[in-house]
Length: 598
Image (tube, rainbow, N blue to C red; front, top):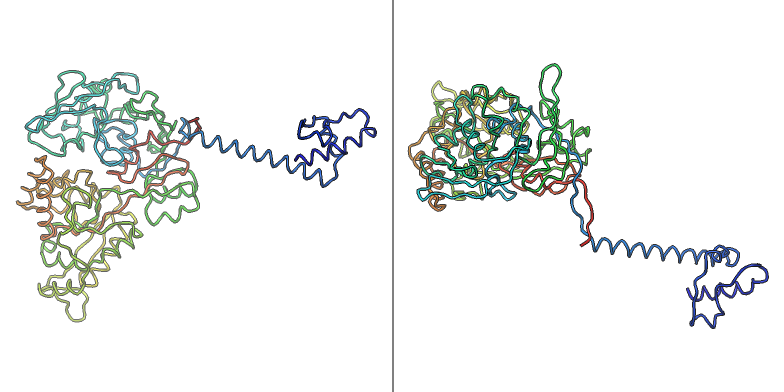
C-alpha cells in the first residue's frame, strides 16, 4: 500500500502543471516513513486520470478487500458478543382430527380435540414436566398425612383468571364437586370417587381418601375451572353451558374466537391468544389457531397443501407424503401406550389356554411392527412398559414359533380336516372375529394378524369400525370377540383400571373382562403402598399371572408422531403421557428472535 501511495505521489507531482488547481496530497517518497497523509476525496476523484487501468483495478480491489475484512471482523465481533433470545410474536396454525365439544377439563378426557385446547387454556394443581415427572402447578407444595390418606395442598398466590378474577381454594372445591356429581358423568369421577375435599382457608385445600393410593398426585393434573363462572350452573345443565366452548382459565393461552360451519354448527376453527398475565413465563407465540378435520386423510391433505403449519398426529405411512411440505417436521415422541389384542374371556373359544397360547406363538411381532409402524415401535410382552416401575424383562415370552403354535393346537384336539384349511374340534370350527379401529396402523396390524393366524388354521374375520363409533357401539357394551386397540397407561403404570375385575364394565378399561382373585388382591395392595419396592414386587407377580393366563396378546409400544412447523423453535420433548402433552412446554415455543449483548 505504501508503494502504491508513493507511485501516486510521484505521478501527481509530475502532473502538477498539467492539472491546474491540483494540490498534491503527499510529500516525496523520502518523506513517507516520517509522515503519511491519506488522499482527500477530491484527489481520489482524479485517480482515473493518474493511474493506469491495471493500477486502478489493484487499488479498487484493495479497498474492497479492506471493507470486506472490516465487515467480517465486525460481524464476528457481533456474533461472538451477542446471544440469540426468543422474542414475543408470531402465529401458528395446527390441523387436528375431530371437533371440540367440551373445552372443559371436567369433560374433556374422552375427546382429543377438547383435551388439546383445555391443556392450553386451563391449569391443574399439578402437571407433568418435560421429563415426565409430576411437579406443582397451581399448587405451591403439599404434605401427606402419616396415615397416607390426607393431602394438604398449598395454593399458589397471585394467580388470576383470564377475566381478571383471583384464583383461590373455592375454585378447586367447585371443580371437584362437579367431577363427583353423578349428573355430570365426568370421566374423571373414578379418580376422585369417595374423596372428601375441604378448604380451611382460601390458600389451602385438603383431599382425604378412603384408603391410601400411591399414585394419587397423578389424579390431580386435571384443569381447575372458575367458581365465579360455574357455581351458579346446576350439574344437570353442566354440559349445556356456553362456557364449555368459550372458556375462562388460568393457562398460558386464552380463548379469542371460534368459527362454526354455517349448516352443521360444527366448529371448524378455534383461536387462542397469549395470556400476558400467566403466572409462569408468559408464552412467546402471540396466537395459535386450530383447524379441525373429519379424518386423518383430510388433515394430511391440509399439511401437504400448506393450509396448516403443524399436524396433531401423523400416521407412519403418511410421513413420506408430507415431504413436499418441508416446513413441517415429524417429531417422534415416546408414549406410555401399548397395543394389544384383548381376548374377550366370556367367549368360549378365546378363554381356552391352548388356543390363546397358539395365537401368541403364531405372531412375528418385529415383522408386524415393520409393516404397521415402519419399524417405529418396540415389541412388548406385558402391560408394564420398559422404564416404568414393575417392568419385568424376565416375563414369560411367546416368541415367534408357528410350528409350536400348530403343535399346541394339534395336542388340544384342534386339527385340520382333509381338504380344509380351517381347524375343527368335533363339529366346532376354530374361528373368531377381530374388531379394530379404522386407522391405518390398526388396519395394517389387523391384516397381519389375520394372515399369521390363518397360516396355523385359525379363521379370522375382520371388523373395521369408524373411530367415532367404536367407543359407543363396541367398547362400552363389550360387543366383540377379540379387540385390537391401544391403551394409554399414564406416567404411573397403575394397572388397576385396566385389569381389576371390577373394571370389566364401562367405564372400566378391563377390555378382556378378565377376572382373577389373586390379580385383584395384588393390584389393590400395590396402589395402597408408597414403598416402591413393594409395588414393584406386586406388579412382577401380577404380570407373571397375566403371562400364564393370556387374557390379551401384547404386541407393541408405538411412538407418537407429531408434525410441527420448522419455524417453531424451543420444542425439546421426547416423551409424553397423552397426545395433548405435546403442549407441556408451549410457553417456551418461539418464532421471533432478537440478539442481546452478552
